[in-house]
Length: 166
Image (cartoon, rainbow, N blue to C red; front, top):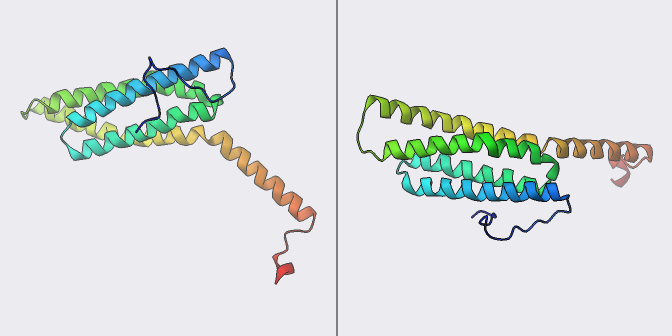
C-alpha cells in the first residue's frame, strides 16, 4: 500500500524546508499518488501474470523513489526529472499495453507492440532501480567517510588490536 495521499488530502511534510521545498514535496506526493493509482488500475486490468509482476515491481520502486524526497530533500531535482518524464512515459506505454491486450485478437502489429512494451518494462525496472540507487550516492559517501574517520581514530588511539581481548 502506498504512503501517498490523494492530492486533495492535506499533505503532511515531515521535514523543515523552505516553502519551495514544501511545494516540491507536495508536487511529488501528488504525482506519486496519481502514478501509483494509475499503475494499480492497469495492474488490475491486465491478465498476463508476467506483466502484473513487472507493474508491481515498478510501483514498489516508484514508491521508494517518492519517499526519498521526504527522507532526503536534496534529491528532489533528480526525483522531479523522474516524475516528469520517465514515469509518465512508462504509464503511457502501460496504458497502450492494456488497450492492445484487451482487444482479444492476435495481429502482427498488436503482438509486436505488446512484445516491445514487455521488453521495455524489463529495461524500465533496471533503470528505476539504478535511479533509486543513485539517490543514495551521497549517503553512501557520507557513510564511507564516517567509517574511514572512525577507523583512523581507533587506530590512532590503539583501540583496533583484537588480540587485547583474547
